[in-house]
Image 1 (cartoon, helix red, strand yellow):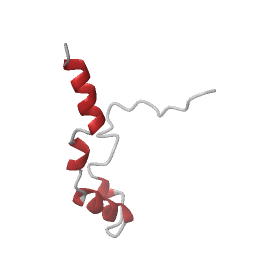
Image 2 (image 1 turned 60 degrees about the vertical axis):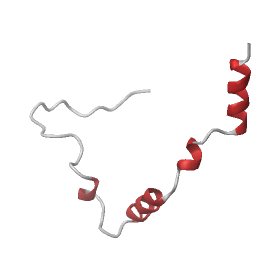
Image 3 (image 1 turned 180 degrees about the vertical axis):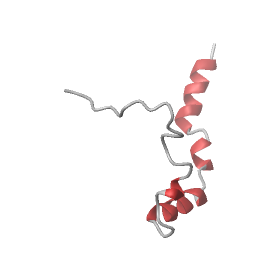
Image 4 (image 1 turned 180 degrees about the horizontal axis):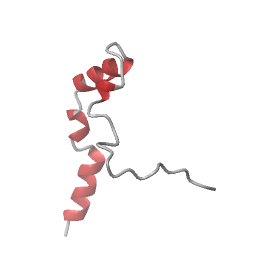
Length: 62
């Protein structure tokens, strides 16, 4: 299975666009998804679960 690689060009300024906005239209769905994700409250994922607490207690017991 062969791999096609781009030719090496040491004078090429950059490999990716400076901003994703250079590639996407202003009303692209990705902006809506990004806004939605930014508004999510993820603090509940950082709280210890009862299983995590029980595991910590088991390891602390002498």
